[in-house]
Amino acid sequence: MKWIKRLILLVVLVVLLVAGLVALGLASIDGVIKTAVKEGGTRVMGVSTDLQKADVSWSGSSLALEGLSVGNPAGYQAPTFLTMGNAKVSVTPNSVNKQIVEIPELTLETINVNLERKEGKANYAVILENIKKFTDAIPGGGKDPKPDAGDSKKFIVRQLNIRNVTVSANMVGASGAIGEVLNTVTSVTVPIEKIELSDVGSPGAADAGVAKTGVSVSELLGIIVKAVLGAASEKGGDLLPAEFLADLKGKLADAGGLAGLTMQVIAKPKEEIKKLTDEVKEKTDKAIKDAAEGAKKQLEGFIPGLKKSDEKPDEKK
Image 1 (spheres, rainbow, N blue to C red):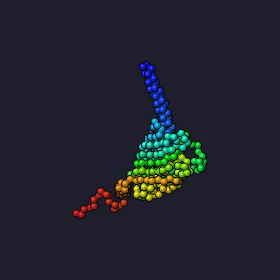
Image 2: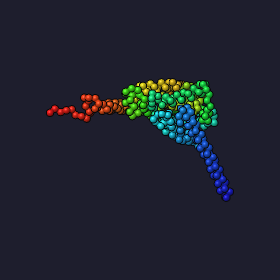
Image 3: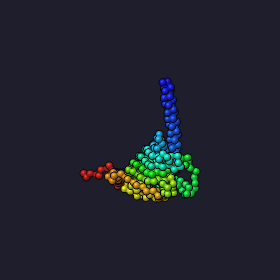
Image 4: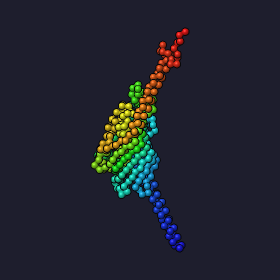
């Protein structure tokens, strides 16, 4: 009976050893993925990119990501340009060790984007210019840059879902007298329920101006940013000022847009959009009124005959 107990103990030890090695291997893979996303994002957008967590499943058929943050270019107010709550990635197991990895579905949740302008230039313009420089430099589009470790593999994403997107637009830099008033108004918010893209990196397709058979991590991140900005320009017509909207669309076009990809955007219900539009109008009207009142008070006492706001007219005796 003792040998049976020893055999059972040996089996348990072997299982624990294997499990430990697998866990160690997965932890190593998690680290590689985090590094690939951080380096890939920084490389394509030209700003600091961070990822808090990457977790590969034991089977290797799925991946969870948490806490993606893309820094704002220097000189702008918000600390981040884009943040993501979490992402779920399904992987075709037999493609993992191949040069091109097949991803049946990639879903990103809770995306927040901060758009702002300063001295006539927007932060999204800086980001899009950097993406264009990167895209122009890949093979077939100009120079052949040395890829980072995370860009050595390519990916085909059959279904890309981006859910619960909030785009906040700060009117800093809007021109004219009204623009100066708008700069004091709370930022405009464009809510987007879902963005869907299909066959990203599919053989024969041209994704965001790049002839493809698979996309790298850097290219995929660039496509995601373009998709979110494209959705904001498509659904922000009733919320964003015409000047701001025209500039956003123009910069997207200059960066190549989403050439070769079909995008479907599902906005929030019309009732919610109308409520937001009414709130923007109310805040704008109040800001204009307050600004006019403030200007009048500053002039009181300097212009002869101009009575102070709180001064009552003379009563007849």
